[in-house]
Amino acid sequence: MPEAGVPLKLAKIRKENISNVNYHLSFSIPENKANPIDSKLLLALSLQDSNTPLFLDFKEESDHLKKLVVNGSEIEIEHRNEHIIIPTNHLKEGTNTIEIDFWAGELSLNRNEEYLYTLLVPDRARTLFPCFDQPNLKSTYTLTITAPENWKVLCAAPRN
Image (cartoon, rainbow, N blue to C red; front, side, top):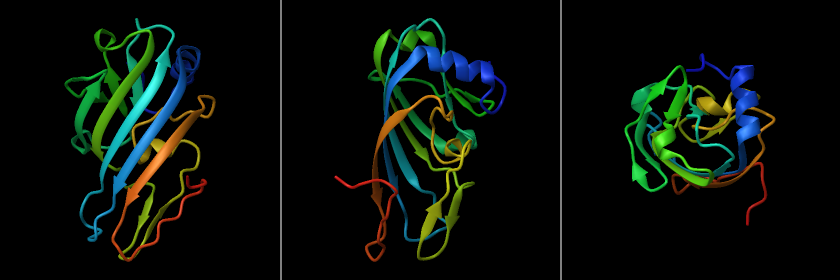
């Protein structure tokens, strides 16, 4: 079990074992800023070796995690030391899919009545959503945001 954060040993193991990472993130921003942000992650990745548990980083309380589906099967959520643990018996070599329903973490959100923004400097993405929060493991992502009707949504990436 890795310690909290992203220890160098864990980062090295993941870099050697994980590739083709794609995040599809959906956030539903409520009108009332006191309400949680319902979110969903659809994660696809390739594994070289499925004999080691997979650790996703999520620096938030466990009660923010609502549902976990790995390769089509819903499994019990195990969240310790800022990591979501995917046991080996749910993994396979090659392409794997992980679906997580969760409430977005708020540590990196600057949330106001009429807007919110985030600044995900290194080591902060895991405070918002489950991910591999290390700079040497590159990924692609798709972002879907549902916001109050009178809001404008801006992202730091081109819109398709």
